[in-house]
Figure (cartoon, rainbow, N blue to C red):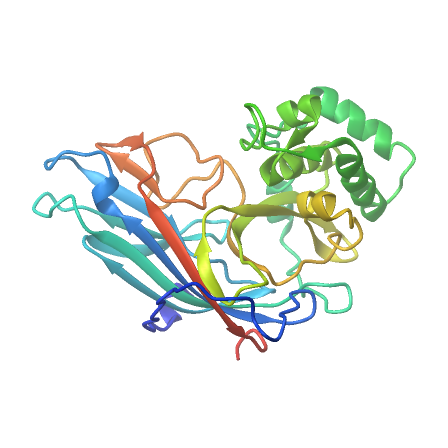
Amino acid sequence: MIAALSSVAICLCVTPQPAAADPFDPWTQPARYQLEYQVDLASIDAKPDDDIEVWLPLPADGPAQRLLSVQVESSWSHRRTGDDLGNRFIHTKRDPSQPTTGELILRCVINRLPVSRSVPERARIDSAHDLDRNRASERRAPADGRIRAIADQLCRNLDSPATKIRALYDYVLDNMRYSKKGRGWGRGDARWACDSKYGNCTDFHSLLIAMAHTQRIPARFVIGFPIPSDRTRGEITGYHCWAELFDDSRGWIPVDASEAWKSQRPDAYYGKLPADRVAFTTGRDLVLEPPQHGDRLNFFVFPYVEVNDHPVAPPKWYLRFVRTPGGGLDD
């Protein structure tokens, strides 16, 4: 429960640091991460009498990751909220009497474990309702047209979810390439990815999830931040995402198709994940709490802002980390 999380102040005085003397192996070693997520409220394009609301995601709490403590500082009133997918948020709203300047700062401590076949993820077997929800087509990952035709052909002679999941995963690796050139990439548009055959992690996993949905295989999108394994502290400037697909015999199988493509190690990232990441939210087409007035969010990892009930450009944000040796999830 969110209310049960303790508040612990964390000093993240980040300075340049060389690579650690004892290399950290994210495939075999757990890690403890101290994160400081800072939002510059003064960078929001708003007038003194405008109504301003800001939502910020909290790190996830699950089988491979435990959120040990949370502390929030805000120039405006704030509260912790969540949705029915298990995602949790910080919501802050400016009182008309308060200035438009200030900061929203989230400090938290997370234990993260590597996930592998030899160390089961202890996946919760979701209810039928939850599984059906993760079979549903998404706005930018529709389970139809050419995507359905390709998936049907790949899975035609396969008789189990496990073999189908692997066939779809292999297809994405064989037909996509990781690239951020031109326009269109980064939106997680499965049709665009299917036709263009390139993109970033969002595009890889949107195509994979859409193909799984055509076969009635539950699949879901997970997004968070990558943590460099060769440093013990520093700043993070971009997100990373992966996917989870459901097999009746194993539960949720994590896969990271884009990292598998970049490393040319397909087996390494199938059913296994290193501890070099922190998950924040699961799902797409998200409705926040309290509900935003704008459209459902394509995905949620950066600050989301509305001014006078209309979405505006994200404010400036900074994310810093410190990594220390980790133990079990609750250690």
